[in-house]
Image 1 (cartoon, one colour):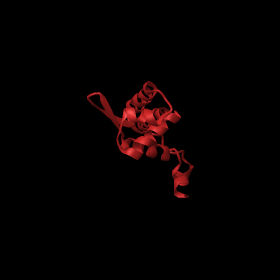
Image 2 (cartoon, helix red, strand yellow; image 1 turned 60 degrees about the vertical axis):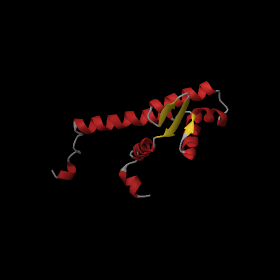
Image 3 (cartoon, helix red, strand yellow; image 1 turned 135 degrees about the vertical axis):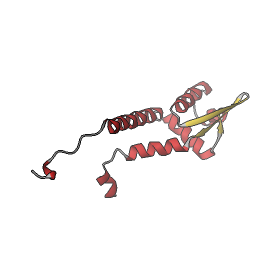
Image 4 (cartoon, one colour; image 1 turned 45 degrees about the vertical axis):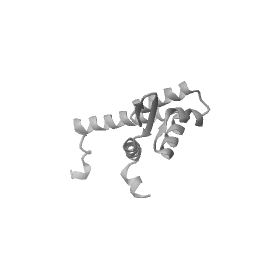
Length: 117
């Protein structure tokens, strides 16, 4: 029997946990972006670099309370950051979170597929 006849090594517990954590992170981030209004909010914030929450309500055909709920979901997922400045709330996109999301999505493809592109 040669080495090529052997089944591949099993994953270590650490590798399995890391893959599980990455899968959970991908699912959490994808769920947060799983509504067109939230995608639009992220695009708007990326274009402006920062934004006051009230301005977002002016750009979306949604009530201010609905925009606020979408912002809450995006913030809880870590996609956006927000600061409260008196009665105003200013939000921006956490670009490192988007980079992490892109890495997680890219990792879905086997390495051979990525190399052939």
